[in-house]
Length: 65
Image 1 (cartoon, helix red, strand yellow):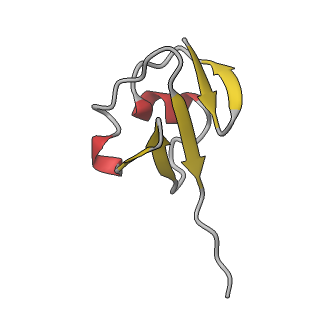
Image 2: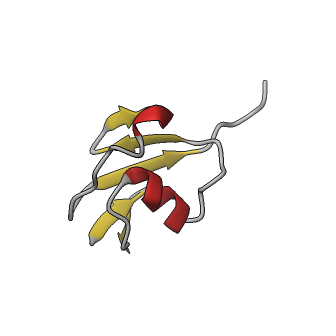
């Protein structure tokens, strides 16, 4: 399916957010996620089904002061 990941068009085989993160190389990473501008907590990723045309944002935490 075709989705947009952080503003870039991507083609993925995954059907859930959790599967997409693994496919995109974020499997064990600590990241925040949003699908179509709605935050998706870690506990809900396995049940969050993706559809063609969805917009996925993946944000990594930053440290600093």
